[in-house]
Image (cartoon, rainbow, N blue to C red; front, side, top):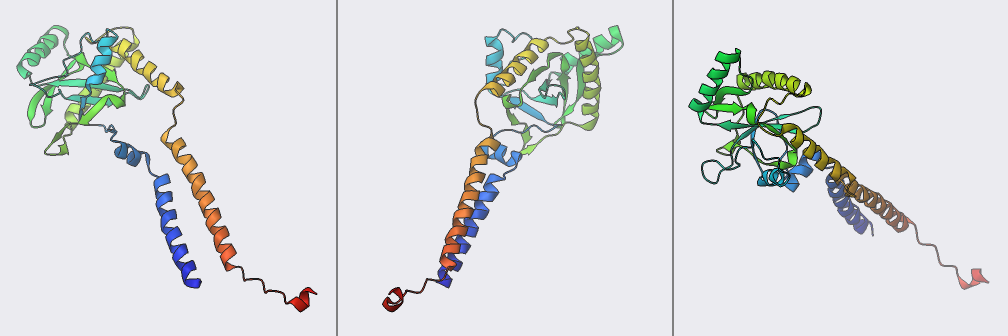
Length: 246
């Protein structure tokens, strides 16, 4: 009997450990199991066709660049998270350096500066970061991070710094009701926020809520196991003799 108790306790301990580990998965781990792409600052991404289909459906595709470049490959977008809305501001990259360098030079010559284009380098080649064509998306519209030989390719710090500085200037223009980009930025932002609100209002169950009953079941199983062990450890009551019963 003692041996069976030890085996039972050992098996229950293994099951219990597995259940508790499952129930306390971190958000990143849950996301990776589900195949969700988690945003990380300083990298570039490719965007799902779903976003562009949705934008066109709402007649908000003006100024958006094609989601195909060089055949069947999606263009690359540098992404910055807006702390106010939690949306990503995505900036398309272009390798048509000469074309955008001329536009950049023309604006500098005319206005003294150019806040809508950043000329930099990415993945070992010169590239233009087109803030003039940026737009907001939800994180769910990210398809995948851009990689080279399986490794994510970061944007250079000097380029990130210049982009961040110019983004601040563009935000000020947005706040003053000025439209500094070609896209329907403000209307797209409202669409993304509306989609987020609809998701919140739907009677869906979050990952945490789904895991909550599991924790309850773990507690119940523990209680049941403890009760079983307690019952097994109770000594058998001695049988009364017939003489004692009389």
